[in-house]
Amino acid sequence: MSRTWHVLGVGSLGALWACRLDRAGVPVQLLLRNTARLQAYHDAGGLRLIEGDQTRVHCLPATTANSDEPITRLLLACKAYDAQAAITRIADRLAPGAEVILLQNGMGSQQAVARMLPQARCLYASTTEGAYRASDFQTVFAGQGLTWLGDADPGRAEAPVALLADLVQAGIAHQWTDDIESRLWRKLALNCAINPLTVLHGCRNGALADHPDEVAALCAELAKLLRACGQTAAADGLHEEVQRVIQATAANYSSMYQDVDQGRRTEVDYLLGYACTAALDHQCEVPGLQRLQARLTKALHKP
Ligand code: NAP
Image 1 (cartoon, rainbow, N blue to C red):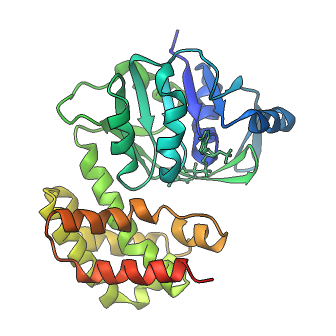
Image 2 (image 1 turned 135 degrees about the vertical axis):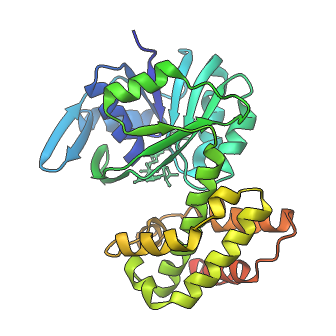
């Protein structure tokens, strides 16, 4: 019998994981923010996962984060800026050796959460899957992809075999890596090279092909920063990959563009903000990234 997966953060990705695990017969328990959200979940009659023209309803058990049942496996699937507050609510329910998967984008929040949970085994994740909420508790699986997983402690090499077996059973495409930090840095760099410019130019990813010099200069600085942080593998071929992503996702709006467009808070502090702070820490000069951050901050705070 598999351990129960507790899912904290029942939004786009949290629901996508919960429904696929449930479909495979893996026990899942949802943790909602408060009694109002729990009531809204019951009123909705469960989670709905929409894949192509199929909609499936998953009536999963749910409680608020305040209940006191011990947790041995947790998926934390809220936004980076909510991660620490969310985990604080349930930290004392985590059993010694509990596995905690951190799905947040960017960097900084995962490391902060891992520091808060010395009794747990924290795993970082970086995914290329895509999902969005059609409405409350209704998730659309918008893009197939792959989720990289690795231990927060790079010295701990052995893979969590039972957890990965559940992912296989649930059909969640994944790959275990001994160097998840490198994956996180690479994704952060891709995000920093593309997302802020799509906001500032008000465009889809593909339109960045009209600004090749700006993109090239950012990639050069990001690669320099990655090398200064000891992330050589993440730096290699960055510009070429950014160009490939711009081309392959030409018709898409970046997640940051969508957040700004829909008046939602962005995760910029965990992307460009994290990069600029890391540059200061490593005394690595990145004037272009700093100018980009200043322009973006001004644009985001425009009344
Ligand atoms: P989302 O749809 O906004 O869902 C976040 C969920 O977290 C919401 O349901 C929210 O609850 C919940 N939450 C926040 N604070 C909470 C708390 N204290 N207690 C309980 N629940 C709490 O976000 P998402 O798109 O799934 O993204 C999650 C992370 O994955 C982000 O870092 C994102 O960048 C990353 N990511 C997402 C995708 C994607 O395609 N969606 C792809 C790659 C990476 P309420 O519903 O009550 O507000």
